[in-house]
Image (cartoon, rainbow, N blue to C red; front, side, top):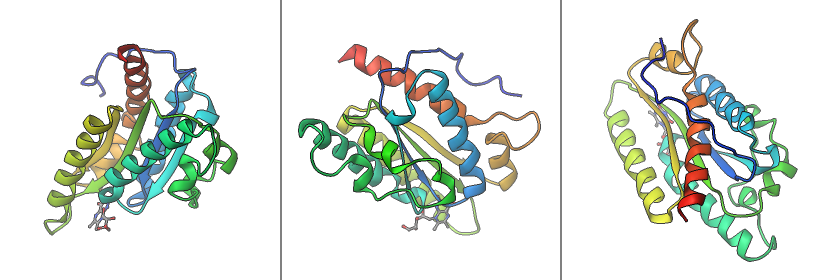
Length: 197
Ligand code: DLZ
């Protein structure tokens, strides 16, 4: 069922810092996507303490959150750990979705992120909301990526139905969890960015 994605490349993530920002809209789909992404990060050797997870209300907020989270991680590294942590900037995670992220791990990722995964689920409704949000979020995330030079992994599902969303979160038997691909992409791009620096 999953034969259209990239051939996976396994890269060493043991010296990488990865941020994840996810929307809280459509949390039953977000939750497995987040789990899948984190599982692959860890499989590649990324330390739990080097994964920072933050949430925003909806996908619309992802570009600004990713931009600020990255900026905070740069400030943090240039001030030798003094001041607010990247995690502090957006506030601690407070939902059940991210209850596994302790405040210690949130503040431990001292240093700029090597890649950030933005996760959201946009499901088309009866109005034009979907079109406006999907277009702006895609453009916004690409802009942040090119402006900062940090790879932003596009973990935003833009689907027409709940069923399509479930099929991309591994919630339908035989379906594939795209969050896993995003975890692998973050490690690959984080490692390549270091090599290309
Ligand atoms: C308003 C809205 C709608 C209708 N649908 C979604 C959705 O399917 N997925 C999502 O992540 N967010 C949605 N939102 C919320 C917006 O992204 C945003 O959070 C609000 O408009 C507040 O700026």
